[in-house]
Length: 446
Image (cartoon, rainbow, N blue to C red):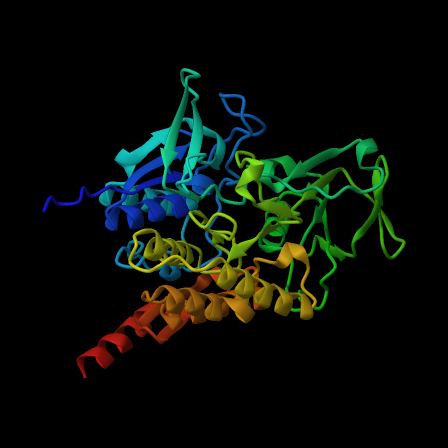
């Protein structure tokens, strides 16, 4: 009896940032044929620093939001991949260029780099018309403008979500005579020298960049609506916290409490919009105020489950979650497990979203994890796909790190973490590291 011909599954991966390269590695491990498209000329996605803003040399919007001198706001101990950790060094919070080098090394080590088509822009993804449940992908080579169309069994969308700025539409914004800048286009603090700056937004970038602006600015007004959340933060003396913006005047800004302050620079730290301009309407996915739907466990497209989104949830152990989501997808795509039935996916999706809405969350928080959700989310993925979960210690460190940032914004990066086992970590100030390591060595030898 003749042997049945083995047909290697074809994976299209869009984006060569952290989520894309670990998805490619996971698909390769499962025996897949992987093609990875990257619109820039480098691995690393948002970790690539460029002084370019606006458009790049191909006339496309600059992708990266990286600014000069950024250090991670998560410890390196939870920023590696299973079996491939970030290089050892004393500090836990490392420079952005060290993260970029780590990602490049990871991609090289697992032979992902040779699968990447750099300077290739995915222009359209749509369902195949041959009844195969596959995909037709049209790509433009940016160096010679040639167009290529390929067929794939699976599409994993890994284009990140820190590239398309969201700027609120305040009354009078168009008449402001000073500078207006979104954090996406911020590179160096010199732009704030001697200025009176208004920072809008209290997310991770808003708090960090308020400190950056304060180094050079005359005065920084920090506008947000979460005073209770930030009540323990200590800012430099030239930072004044103010409520939400009511309207913008030509030379000043009026706030919800009726106060009005002269402003020369408005700095928007107001987040980003999820954007997938290459998705054909027939893909059956819509983005509603940053709620990407309908997705099963924030990953699989319920209408076409051979399409997956890697990396949508935020306030997470990012690289570890990317890798877990990729393994989740490949558990089904490789044929190891049957694909979830559509009814199961719909029921799960509706149950989770209804629980979020019942707690008062907004659509833009549909993919938010944090302390309330991330641990159970990781377990849910692992259990359904019958794969190894993320160790609890990683989630615990993530939660502790976030707590410490709220307690001591200016000094939390002096904390050092060391993982003892899957459930235990130890922590100290950088000045106490030698004592900590000696104590750990004694415990291991006893």
